[in-house]
Length: 558
Ligand code: GLC
Image 1 (cartoon, rainbow, N blue to C red):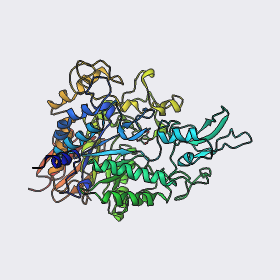
Image 2 (cartoon, rainbow, N blue to C red; image 1 turned 180 degrees about the vertical axis):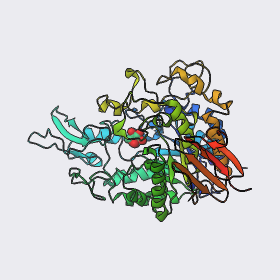
Image 3 (cartoon, rainbow, N blue to C red; image 1 turned 90 degrees about the horizontal axis):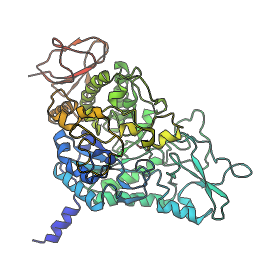
Image 4 (cartoon, rainbow, N blue to C red; image 1 turned 90 degrees about the vertical axis):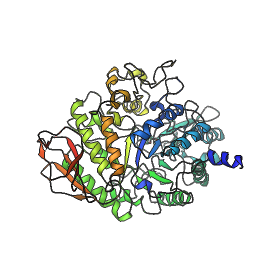
């Protein structure tokens, strides 16, 4: 037997090709590597920590994991400032360890999706460093958006575009002789210069990065800021009410050609490598255009995430989502949270339970018991909807947003760029509690030298994996049961949904021939429709009635 061939196969695994449609129904668990588990004891999560807990993810019942960026990065924006797309951040591990992780996960039936960040790079990336060094008019600067300033002295910003992190989108450079120089564009922080996607090097490089990771067995990519890559080269101001395709730096029509090329590349691999877009767009029909059969496979459904806990709102979002996806044949995705937004237990415990970045404030009154009830109900509701499901690490434990992080520990640029008005996103990025009664709660080994990079609340002793694994009333228990049923139930995942009659404030829908989801968002307990059995309920029934803020899964036929 030729052992070198075996070794070769082991080093570059391929996701199984037996189920080309896996992504249409998948449950995808989001790992924020800095905060999942710390294997080497420096207080920062890493790939060794993830490898130690792959069994946990298998037992939870997920089909895939999605890593937020794990590349070499100065972490000016938690890794969304990439310095080298082919190198793992040394704080997390190395390439050999990433390959081992992809392989070990596959052995447990878990595919790996990674984050691709095409809109911008780190200001430490060699291309940007070369552009700064080469000076105005150089070919190196063509890969970015360098422009002279406006006004006589060139000291006015080239445009008045507002950053997604608030504040300006241009930073002025300094010439080699110390005089003020050109400005460069950054839709996010100044450490994240935007790439010029009209430049052939930029396109070639990203296709090469995709190949690099597909060759290593990743089953798909989540595309960061997927609707922002193309800018109108004339750099006009943003119109007051831009029509479709008229915004100078969002949702430009030219983007579709890029994704068609990526799709062709992805389709050249076996085992269905998926393209998942991070697309925040108010116009759901424009959103669906990215999901045409020769473009992206799916995109995050942020409309649902942004809605308040209200039957009318959620039903409208579900209907609009399904209607917009149907013509392009793409499955919907259901997302309750991620590393950018307020944890559901906290959000749903507020008088205004909708989500908007601009509205985030510290000190908002919150009823965490109510939030927990609703999150449990929402977990079952979303797991019953057609399509794929995203689960952000820690939501399966019902972790709340941490709102009292000491000011000197906050790292998120969103906080600083808002002048401290926005609390930032670190509150949903606190290291996970695994076991024990005191921090680091098994996040780091007991012998660890470093403290967790963000402090964990003492009250998380009650929310550790260990505490919840033995408690049938826990969130972890609920999620584990739900994902087990979802996998076994033929009507769940991708496929049709039909609304059933229900009282005001109740969302009831059938999936397949014998399954009914009933979510009670009204203020009163409701009677359950006729059923043969109760498969799962997010709250104990009250004299056979489904209490407010609860979901029940029913078997409707014998
Ligand atoms: C996406 C990421 C977010 C990041 C931003 C800039 O929205 O989810 O975390 O800050 O892009 O890359």
